[in-house]
Length: 112
Image 1 (cartoon, rainbow, N blue to C red):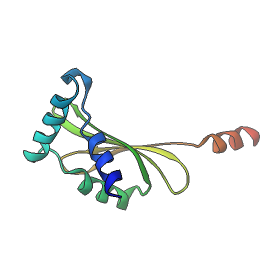
Image 2 (tube, rainbow, N blue to C red; image 1 turned 90 degrees about the vertical axis):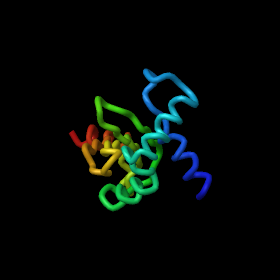
Image 3 (cartoon, rainbow, N blue to C red; image 1 turned 30 degrees about the vertical axis):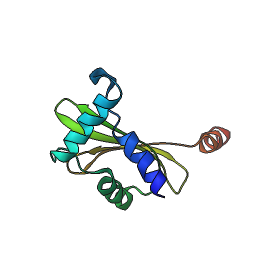
């Protein structure tokens, strides 16, 4: 469990490549957390699970204009791949996009 949390935290520190790569990205993201511009990932994931439950597959932290955004991909209990964008400062859900599984897409085609 701890290893999974560490992996997710490392993924969350990924920021746009326009800023460079490697340690500089991690430092900038860490500074945003320390400055209170970004909520820590465990807090965000806890809030997310209440609104959009599922298994977290990938986490990215990006800056869009002046706003930090967590983009989280998860697999819902219904088996849907879902991408959620959250305001990284408040954990407010900004957008939820789900994609049907391949099996669901095939069933939909078969029923036509």
